[in-house]
Amino acid sequence: MELFKKLENQATIESAIETIQYCNHVKRGREKDGRLIPVSIENELGRAIGDIVGELAVSSGVKLETAAKNFEKITSIDTKVLNL
Image 1 (cartoon, rainbow, N blue to C red):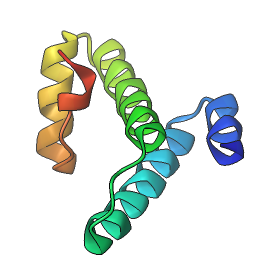
Image 2 (cartoon, rainbow, N blue to C red):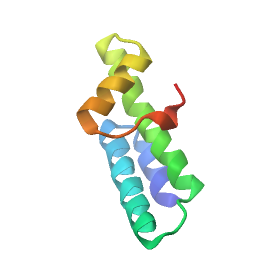
Image 3 (cartoon, rainbow, N blue to C red):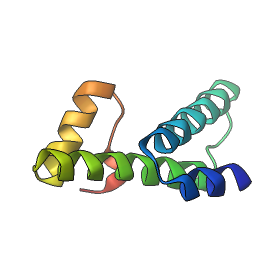
């Protein structure tokens, strides 16, 4: 999808956040309509969350698992998609 390419090329925290917001919007709409979530949405969501969690780990000097737990506490967004 063109939007995901554009956001990924920007490689900023803001673009990762925008990706998460868009994916969650699509997921909510599809769940409301009883439709399946596209694999591409799940993949992009996982990539964006992984980017942010990775940045948190590096900038905080903690393990990836710790950064993922902190991310979940702060955002209430599940990091299971990262397969830690």
